[in-house]
Image (tube, rainbow, N blue to C red):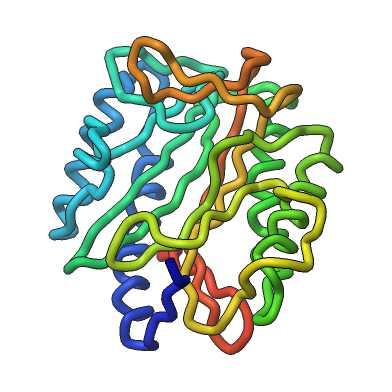
Length: 253
């Protein structure tokens, strides 16, 4: 399937849904506290999205039961909200999708719960910094494989490894569109495959593991993804549009 090119008017609609994602993440970042349950955090997120007259896009998507992915500590992505209580020293990934008038937004953060260790601060920083680095080097004409190599090199230079088997993606009138954008180079040649063009809109989402990038999906809930090393991970995501040959972040207030 071809990678779609959005018109300026369509990018403006995507800007709205993504701004709602950013507002929701910032709301949660402000109000999540030790002692809350993951279910309460999800409810807070869903209610805030509803207050914006929008829809939590993840709820029911592929059977996912909630509007907010709550990935706690060793869960890197796709954590299901439950009665687990977050406590001081935890790290929590929040991944949110919003649909507004048929257009989708998507972004994620990993946030500290109270005071966290320096090691966890570095882990979170790797995901955020890798994301911002990748966005800064994007230009029209660059190949997506070159972008994935930039992500991989940044992550490994920090002493971490990217989670394998999961990726960033295109977005628009569907929550997941072409292309798939891993955080590592597939194959040996980055100078092949589709090129980044003006009007493309896609999500970049570095998912960081400490020792092993091999993913393990929880056998009970069938969603939560951990590294086989059993260690904590981190995740950050933005939706970007290619405008005037550069990447512009849409998932901001």
